[in-house]
Image 1: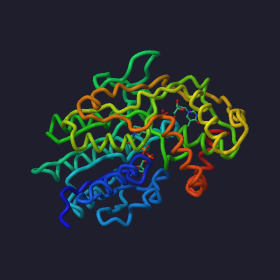
Image 2 (image 1 turned 90 degrees about the horizontal axis):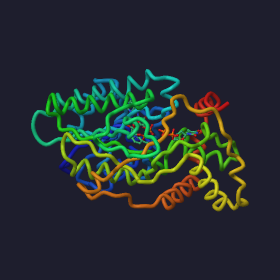
Image 3 (image 1 turned 180 degrees about the vertical axis):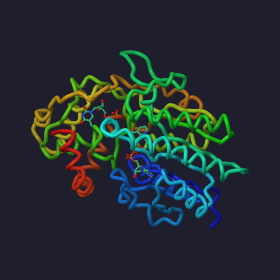
Image 4 (image 1 turned 30 degrees about the vertical axis):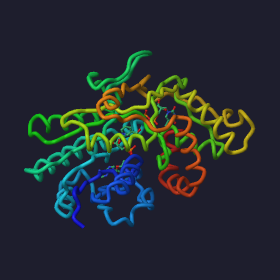
Length: 349
Ligand code: NAD
Ligand code: TYD
């Protein structure tokens, strides 16, 4: 079969990447989808067991820090487009070890940009860089992040993502590389590694372990269902303007403590526990260093220009998410064995 596009999706074995790969492989049988992933602790090929036999899917085990790996994948599959998600993605890990974030998120991104610049001299191409709203810093009680909000990253993670965004924009202005960017709020959904708030709490509620809420739990995040983020990337990749960035979010702000309480109530119901039982597990712990107070996205550009909006309410999305974890205990058990135990001890003991 002659494929009309040959897309390299980096980080396709991770949380958001696997949802994007699934969407593209199923929706676009005429595209070749190459999942380029190093399979770090956060990458798991089982996330794709329902699509990995499809004829338009390939897996390439590679490291974006290696220009040779990238060149090999570009040549082997004649890559026409890139959707770049591979990254170190956890703020707490970036605080204990920032260098890995500089290597993967900054140098890895520049390696990819360099290869795309070298390979794409003619024809139509897109380099879509997937980034975060955390590059904008921290909001007070009011206001929303707009595309024009000045970058003000505060954590090593957000600083590395901000730097990668700047390189992507620099390649557009300097070399005319056909880039697009998206900056999304916090995602939740199935296949989410339980180092992040929602899957960690689901795992601990299920196992009757303490629920570690940082500080007073007053920090606010804007939550979006991961499938809606994948839909947004699809829309921007196909219809967004070159050189533009699009904010993606759910208009769905929650303080951490309210969110954890809501999850407790939902899981009490689903697990047949008495009302209020899981909430007893809530434990306030030492706050994260430099903890950003509030993130909230103004998504009116993508809504007005490209017609995207979230497809589910938070209540629906969270209920589906909890169901997935309860029905896929094996997945959680596997990813929380071994190195996860060491990580958990180090962070929470
Ligand atoms: P994740 O940590 O779940 O997955 C990252 C993936 O990248 C893993 O499969 C990992 O194996 C792979 N990877 C890491 N280093 C690599 C390297 N050197 N070479 C090749 N592959 C490598 O991350 P996620 O939550 O799915 O996030 C994906 C992207 O979306 C990231 O760029 C992140 O900054 C961005 N983002 C995430 C969120 C969120 O809420 N999770 C929100 C907005 C933006
Ligand atoms: P996280 O899922 O790590 O995402 P991010 O830091 O990128 O927003 O954390 C979401 C919020 O939850 C953040 O304010 C930190 C807080 N948090 C806790 O209170 N306890 C935890 O154990 C974790 C992992 C996060």
